Amino acid sequence: MSFSPQRAEIRFGCGLSPQIAPPQSLDVLLAGLDGPDAMAERFPVLSYDAYWQRRAQWLELRRKRRKASGARAAALADQTRAANRRFFQDLLQGVGQNVQRWSRTGTGFRERLALFWADHFTVVGKSGPQRSAVASYVDAAIRPNMSGRFADLLIAAVTHPMMLAYLDQQASVGPGSVFALRKGDTRGLNENLAREVMELHTLGVGGPYSQQDVRQLAELFTGLGIDKSGGRTFRPGRAEPGAEVVLGRSYGGDRAGLEAVYRVLYDLALHPATADHIARKLAVHFVSDSPDQGLVGHMSARFLATDGDLRAVYAAMLEHPAAWSDEAPGNVKPPFDFVASACRALAVPEARLRDAEPGQVNRLIYQPVRAMGQFWQRPAGPDGWPEADEAWVTPQGLSARLRWAMAVPRRLLTDLPDPRGFVDDALGHAAPEPVRFAARAAETRAEAVGLILSAPAFQRR
Image (cartoon, rainbow, N blue to C red):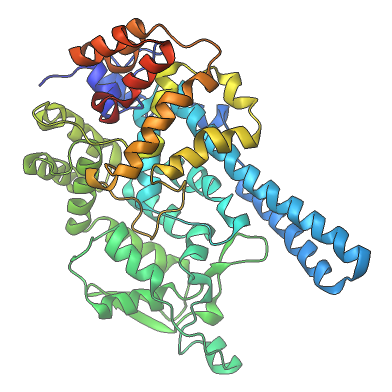
């Protein structure tokens, strides 16, 4: 099948919109990755620096509360609870801003890639305050690097303080380090980051590495940590001395530092197993749970030929005929994608979400997405959200989608669209005739809109 603007927006973008035209060519689709990040600028989220400042204030409140008593303790308890609510409101703001980005963007492929790479380099906040900072990690480490070299994206994500905190890297100490020997530190080596870098971020499960490689990489990573201002730092005194051998190559030596960390990440980024792993993950996410092997091979070869130039890899995917095949139904949209693409199809006004109270965002988006099976930015583990359709096609998940489709659009819009036009706005010229009939025959607009959004054709890309 040849290029189709509507297919491009549905399969590789954020879904059809009655207000924003789909890309008219492959060149236009790829050009959307160039230039300033307009959506991140237009709909900003809490910055990492602002989060860290609020965290410091929160910790100080907790410290004072532990030492206080009586009325003073009660007042500090109220202030602490207010600070906790503020962190949750920051998280909800991030949800609303991400829906806005999907709803208003003219470069849907860019937003889809941001979500894909944020999942590939999963970070989960381990506390209420930290959960509010995941969006800032995505904007700082993922979005600026996702159309350049994979090595740069890998380094930015792996060494970001949020990743170091999530995988407990700041607690890792080299067994032979100065700190361990002089201070009697018993925490020891932590292999979490090294294992996930190899297993999830680069070479893939079953890749060409051993437990010894994991340990050597973990020793090379010792010293990586977070300083008092929340930034990434390297502490030579905690680093394991000497060189480490990873996949047969030696790194480090006389003086521990970031240079060796960057070198090993760069080499892992360009490994043939990494090319295969990344190519397959992209093909699975955008095209099919069981992608065409020719498509995967084409993308992998382009990855290796360009030293991991991601824009070139995306071009290889989009130029392959298998990427446009309609022989099998598209992948099922995960819950956030479903809700955000519905808001896009409904043309929910920008002011509706911008001016919404946090409680409204919670009730209309955050909690429904969770009921559908996707806890916003909190997957169960570092491997992120599942791609397989069956993970989302569950009785509970489908019931929650149906309830949302029937009830929430009327709360987002003052006037619901005419169903006869909305079926084309949401599904395009490929809308199945049974869906068109249901839209015409429904007793109310709310019911018709709900039926269109609940249709299998809208649930898939």
